[in-house]
Image (cartoon, rainbow, N blue to C red; front, side, top):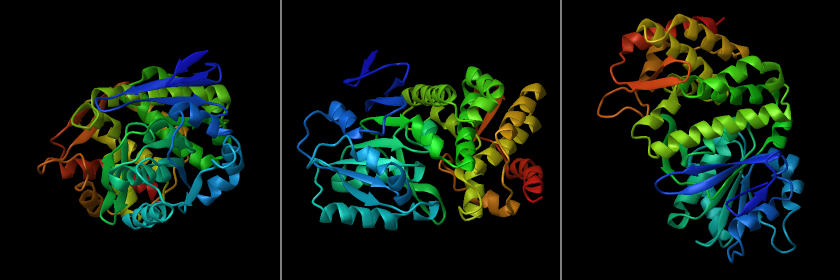
Length: 378
């Protein structure tokens, strides 16, 4: 048994990982049975609160898990539910305004708590809503996709998209806690599961050789969503990110390595209108292009490059898309890592090692993208 954040859990079922940053410390619980009876977990985290609880979720998540979620709340304490449609196109400021108005109309105040119960879009939007509503209210993350569990729910980044780029409006706002229930992963479509696994592949590439080997050796168990495999993959991915965020909370240095594959992945998403690919799929294509940059600079032993490429493809197939290199370079120029006209780009020099370069050129990126675009267009 283990106690963290005031909650007692059996480590064979639930693991607790502490995120420690300069501005906030909070637990991430990973395991089975966290959604069912969530009200019981909430009381252990927050104690006797005077404020009301609100839940932001999507209609499909609520249809699948709403009854189990509500079962732990006492009569008269059930939260008010706010709904947001699924899809990246809804991750916009217009949704923030609508949801903030709904909170206000329902009487939410600074003592209120928001629970973001859904995938990465719900988590990013809900976190940003909590960050700015009445200048900040507390919130909790319950990520329901693998992508959100292993990446976006941890680290305090919140935000929404503009038509000119992804996550260009946002704030750092850490949750009180994260509850990553591996049970909900069994209801994910296979494509959603694979898309999330690309973020775990990234975690292995940039910092965790043991996770990388696990994903190589246990591919069948991971894709079958076996409970022990999911527990390991999610816990290892969260632990890696917690370590990086603890060192560099505000992405002023080391935290940038978490964006391996993201500069070009985000550009691919933007150019294709956020409709052709899931986020993880775009990042996978971006990682393949990034490996081409690493090869051209002779940063990476070819045997490592081949293993990385093989592991990315092992969790495919990757859906195709069509895009033009000039449009992708233009979109990549808006990347948030760029500062004072300097384009920052994450590269790897071996399994478990990554760093940022600041002199990558358009010509290099174009050369790295060309074979990727040829393959994606087939």
